Amino acid sequence: MTDRKLYLGPLTDNRRWDKLRLRPDDVIVVTPPKCGTTWMQTIVALLLSGDPEVETELSIKMPWVDIRFREMAEVAARLEAMTARRSMKSHTPMDGLPLQDSVQYLCVFRHPLDAHFSCRAHMRNMPLTIFNGWYPEDDPDGVTFRRFLDGGPEGFDGDAMPLAHILRHFEAAMALAELPNVTLFHYADMTRDLPGTFAKVAALIGTDHPPHLMEQLISVATFGHMQANPERYAPAGGKGFFASDAAFFQSGSFGKWEGHLNASELAAYNSVMEKNLSSEARAWLEFGTTGTASEAAKA
Image (cartoon, rainbow, N blue to C red; front, side, top):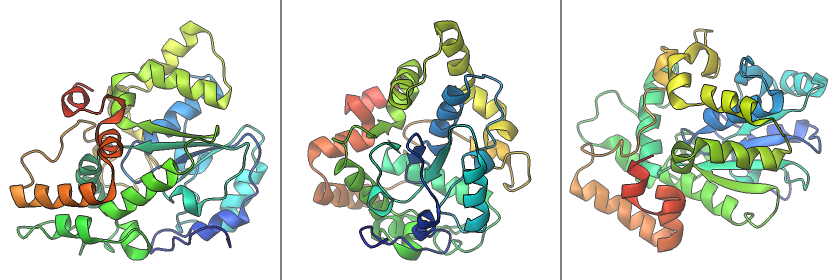
């Protein structure tokens, strides 16, 4: 842990990675919350198995290592006992994860405002009260958005997913983006070109399936199919953890903030983005490879 940043919050603890022995062919999906984590995990599960009917069971088979809900000794033992190729997820920025040359790190990003509004719905769907102060059910004074802009990237704030945490993720991933085993993806690009995303991930993790099988794998990873089968694809789906598994896939649309933020709130957001990112970096973080709102809206 000496050469990594500490990310320690009420939900997560990145020191848990120190108790896990990584394997050379591991695949780690690294994202801020609500940026396409489950989607990318599903793509990886389908490609590793080559089975359109695979039971992903993400919370058990491809666990979120950082989260404190399960004893790390149990998580590490379960992963160590796996004989098939493994994948895990993390909401810790890359500067807080163990970096090994042969492990593939798939970093997924989404427009920060879309991620924020998705997180609002997500918090209401979970049986947790710890973040009720950040995400009040009734918020006429705009407390939630102010905290999104003002929160820090670490500690309690980090687990509540403010803009600073998203920016830390992006900066940490960008700092390593030239490495062959660290790859950045964007939610808008995944939506616009799912077959291209499958091909890119398959090449990175070294899987090869015939075209007819790839078509089947892609078809079950569409947002519509996952939304229609939430008990299968939601983390801990069918186990009663969420108030509604279907609500986990409430909307994968672009522009979720439109009509919900006033001019001063948007100006405050723009100020933070302009202060922290170049125009080119901001365009990618918000809109993906097209760099424009009009093209992202087509996704």
